Image (tube, rainbow, N blue to C red):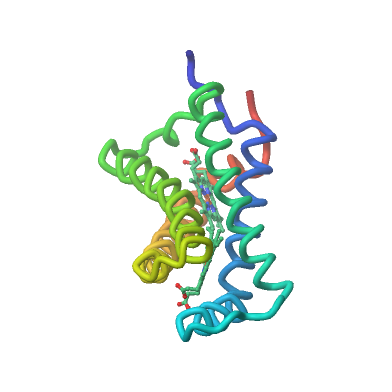
Length: 163
Ligand code: HEM
Ligand code: HEM
């Protein structure tokens, strides 16, 4: 399979939909955290639509992450930007794989906590939250560095589809 020049429209849509869901997961987690505190105290939390949306949003991230990995395999992804030193290209590749790992492990740990009552899974969920935040921060800074310092138009790869 020869590498495509850019991402497909579907890959780009999935990237931004997942980004939006993850931002909402972070901004609106409070009712879920409160419900979990009640569960830990042996109580049964009442219905809250934001708890339900946390579960649905998280499961969607999982499904979309798996879908994106399938697309990576079947359609491929563009090669590193021209002139990127090999060690940075490798770092970017590993960073992307780590983001995929967290987009899978976070929902799984959340489900194990919420549906399985496993406290260690909730602790893992909280630790992974920090790892995801840190990785996304580096990811965004790297994208902005490419765009505004190196001026290689990297951001456009996640805007305009290319075959
Ligand atoms: C990528 C998807 C997800 C993200 C980004 C995410 C994010 C978060 C965040 C930021 C918190 C607050 C943690 C804290 O209090 O410090 C949280 C808590 C929680 N989430 Fe998620 N979540 C995701 C998926 C899920 C799923 C699918 C479930 C369950 C089906 C779930 C269940 C929980 C539970 C039970 C808590 C409270 C326990 C705790 O604080 O660790 N999460 N989540
Ligand atoms: C929750 C937030 C985010 C996550 C989890 C995430 C995840 C990812 C992943 C996994 C890839 C690699 C796609 C692949 O090759 O399979 C990627 C690519 C990319 N992301 Fe993000 N992203 C997020 C937010 C952002 C934001 C806010 C920006 C813009 C500032 C951005 C800009 C880009 C760009 C430009 C690429 C293409 C990089 C390249 O072609 O080498 N991402 N993102």
